[in-house]
Amino acid sequence: MENEDDNAGRVSVNPQFLTLDKSFKGLGGRLAYTKDLDKTSSIQAYADLMAGKAAGQDAFVKPQKIGIEYRKSFAKGGKVKSSSASSRADGIAQRGKTKGRFV
Image (cartoon, rainbow, N blue to C red):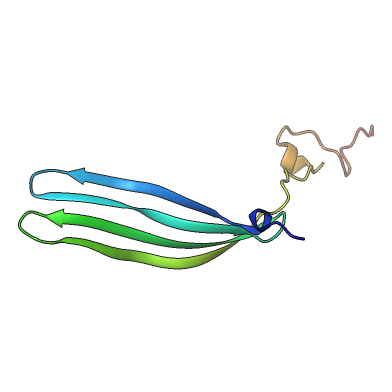
């Protein structure tokens, strides 16, 4: 039997700004739900929201951006080592006529 918690995703709230002054009070941020598909990929549904109240007006909540993102991480890698003189940049020839030959 599969445990429901093993299949659950993560909900996150990331506040982005807060404004508190006499004429306007507001809060904005991202509400996101992330579900891992396997070890290297996940899918995220998100909504960027803004809530506020201007002086003398009603409070409001407006969606700014709503979307779904697919994320895939790739293996970490480094630079492929090359033995050409141009990659060494120190003037040592490793191939060709000047490779340790005496005339």
